Length: 558
Ligand code: GLC
Image 1 (cartoon, helix red, strand yellow):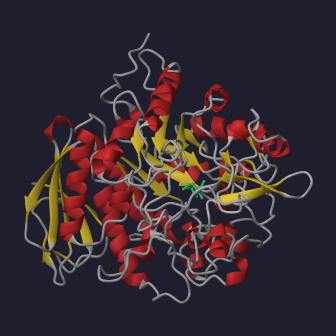
Image 2: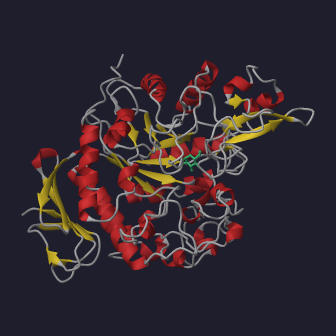
Image 3: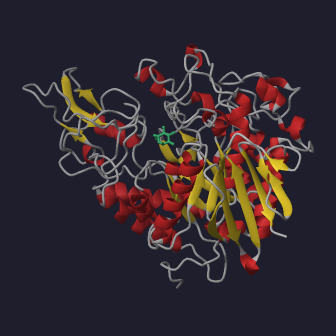
């Protein structure tokens, strides 16, 4: 028996770089305008050439697609939109052949309202075992006409929807922290717990290497479902002050799951199956609780993702994050972009005195400066991929794709847009299908030219065929960074800060065998001298021999 509380010090996931594929938008093999599993399989060699360790697939399960697949109707099947279970097996086999591990998404906080359990719950009586799998309550007020509490949905509007009885009169309410078509499970119910153990085993037995756990901080709600403090917004204040987030009981779920995935460990093999939390939790030490030795392997560091682009903020954010996970013996998990936030090539163009755009950038917002955004994004990526720990990349960032900020209202599909009546444009701008070839229909996304969201013109210029082998392109920059990170073992290194002034972020990473790499980012307006040594990586063009603004260099000290 392998001791599950002792991860190997050099287990693969501790410094892995994991690439997120959003199946709708990566590659479309059947030309219907929506990406699919065979499309993904046919492009996996792009990831092997990029130099990542694993691929994480956002949901591809049976779903009415009201929240792009994060509304699951059958956890053990593939939606026909994306293919079949056989297509999934072919994808996994091909990935493994290429040396890539496969992480799938698990959505345990809620199901789709089309899930057989929820349909049965609607047909059943209050107090029935069918209803007990979800969170049904009577309303407040004389006739139960008011929701059971004041919680708001993350996507806008109330977090409760009232049901109708068979005779058409109003019935109980059910809780949905997201869309009304995403009813929350009751995680106190042993049947729910057992069902998810079984779902984990279903995919583990099919050979997946891990799970990204959706809304990992939301499974348990505060007992009694008390009103939320009025001054906090559910979407932006995901802390334990809220009765729906980060409750101590969630950790019991993860201890249980850790024991389960550890049953799949093989003595002497670096083949851990991993669990990574999507937990929008602050502060750092609350987040670190999710990666205690007997819990999850990784937890995305969203505090880092949201850190403003200044030397002081970056240094403070990295320092605090490393200290928090070191205290529990876990590596950090860095991320700059995903399918829920504006791409960092656009987000980072905003100065600190502008609001950090997390909730989407629309046509009426101040538009990002593409040149500044991409320069900073590459500089930030070069910082992130030097840091000790693992890192997640989001599809298309290796091409320098900007956010699509001018999508017309009538193509928007994120429920956030409708539920906030357009106040928040939502997340479609980072979900636009990626380009593969500048001169093909839909820039090579498929052969028909259909695309479920329209692609900005600039995506053509950024297609891989325009960047492949082109010195200085974003794609070649990512390849070089990843190869150098691997060669020096930076992800398992140790960070030491250097003080080079208010405008310069500088640290060394000491990796295996005492080899050192110095990392320097210039946040100031004027160019600075490069450190002495061999220049391994630079995120932009040099100014003669000097490092310009918003540029990061890696140097092997001479
Ligand atoms: C997570 C997903 C997001 C989804 C939500 C509800 O935050 O990343 O895309 O809308 O959960 O499942």
